[in-house]
Length: 109
Image (cartoon, rainbow, N blue to C red; front, top):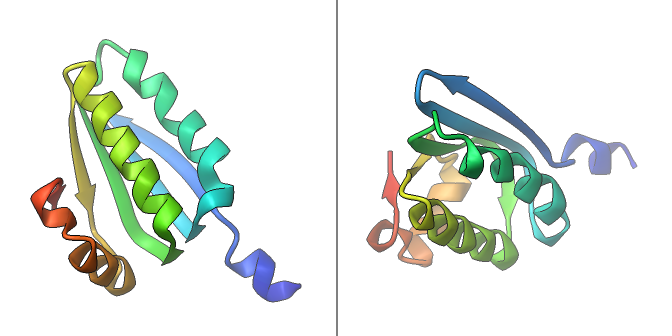
């Protein structure tokens, strides 16, 4: 039970000027979809926000559903003329991005 709470998924959005960052922590998986989608929907409609970053520094686990959600986000962000960057990947996240060849589809910093 304690392990389940420790690895729960959390999302926080911060904004600075025309940049927004979605800070993720815990397990980013299929069950994360509602929270993740809610975090970016407001940003898509915010005329001040020009770029969106997703911060992976505190992500402990990701599954294939998480990768799919990132692809959807990329398409939606691009569809409204904004840019998307994946930032500060944890070592685990970086390994998954490498396996999925995400460096060909995303800017990863």
